[in-house]
Amino acid sequence: MSNDKMPNLNETPAPIKKGVLNRLRAYFMAGVLITAPISITFYLAWLFITFVDSKVTPLIPVKYNPETYLPYGLPGLGVVVVVVGLILTGALTAGFVGRFFQRLWDKLMDNVPVLRGIYKALKQILETVTAQQSSAFREAVLVEYPRRGMWVIAFITGKTEGEVQAITEEDVINLFVPTTPNPTSGFLIFVPKQDIVKLSMKVEDALKMVVSGGLVTPPDERPQSEREKVHVHSTENDAAE
Image (tube, rainbow, N blue to C red; front, side, top):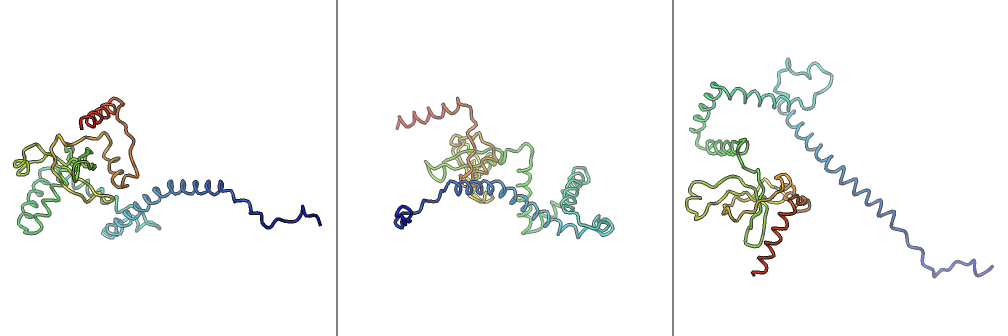
């Protein structure tokens, strides 16, 4: 037997090409990035619809419930009933009779020791947020917090009034600083107007950045002239220091 045909036991096997594995891994991650947000969104929507239906649909009289005459259920029936009920309630309270009963209800709640505080606070918050002319949570800003040199994204909730404004030397603004990843909790701070840096990004984009912990960063859509001004201003400050 010729030695040329003998296998070389000392020869190391050829390394496995990783190009295919890397490509499959990239395809897998791309599939996750595409399907995960869609799946989670539909899942949460389905949970909300199911929860509302389970609470509202049993309250509909059997005679007026469409599911009584159909061989299958109607997903979202409870949500539709709630939306229609809110529209009718708003239409009724917009008239004179509705405003009369609303004032009567407010006076009734004023006599309840514990619930009146909760009721007034929730009513004031909802009126402020849903008011068409309100500027609450409609503008994202940048502010130094909790100390100089550290910046956070905050949202303007209104102009400071009352005792807080009276005892401050400068005009201050109410700012809500949300926490990550739960933006429903946060801090209320009062900041002088000149210390607030307004952002051009939308409130939705700012919320995405806060919730993601900075993983989702919206692009800088400001005009080039504004970017150059800020850059020159920062350079001048560094030179002055």
